[in-house]
Length: 370
Image (cartoon, rainbow, N blue to C red; front, side, top):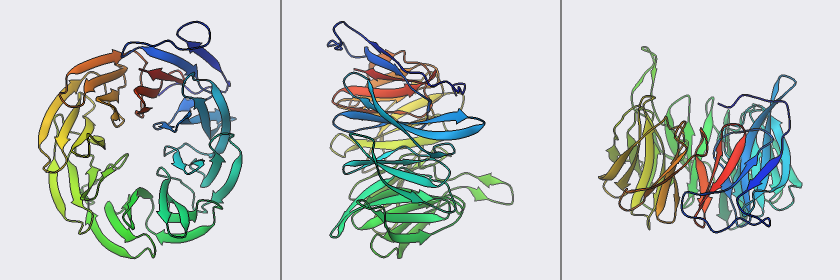
């Protein structure tokens, strides 16, 4: 990871004159902005902004930051400290808000345009562990948060607690859809489906390869799951991805790419027909497209450099941020190489929209690649 720094740096490099990024061929870096901290987890985008979570050490303590950049220019619009401790989750967009927090248990809801704080929630046991998830209900919008000790659903407008689902040492909210919330218990290595209105458990599935006596704790690796009306698609750190029926919790299929060692999430795209996942065994890496209905592999491409983040799908291109080769992109349908952008090593993946991919990388930078 990039070395920590106490300095707050802000610089901007644009390709082109007159303050505007010119139209560029695919794979060209449109802009690169130096951030006030080291990127942590993937970014998220809305119509005007890129939101990137970061970590910055100050006086021996880790501080979680959130920065909003203008999508077209990379100019930093605002930045806010959102708590102590390393950020273990990406920010989440909830209506007019962006919600983020660190490992201290503090979670802030900030106005997406101005960065003004709208509400703050404190989880006494600490540890925001998953990206905040929005849910539309008859009574208004809610936001689901996964913490040490369980999951919490808050009123999105006020931050008032509406529901709590107690669990073990660490809980991640994987998805909220169809009146269900899907939760991952890290200590128990289980995925639960609960009724989103009451918190009542509907089903649970235990992850693979658990042997506590031998110290084997392989299991679900839910950095980013995918979901549709049929299945919840779950990566695991023994490489296999599972498709689990959203209604029954029964495993529909499993897919194991080569190399093995761990899959780092799924992206559902192409009209819901295909999944894209990355995998790495610390010696080699790959990205693959698989059929969402059957788990059959359509194509697989080897990657140079270790991969720690999920792919990002933008239009007809699927791109993977690597630890040494920069951003590598392939055609989503045929797997043919499209471009490589030398952005620098990236550890947490990327985000994208409208033909542009945004990736946080080493030396505390974020780049926009077309």
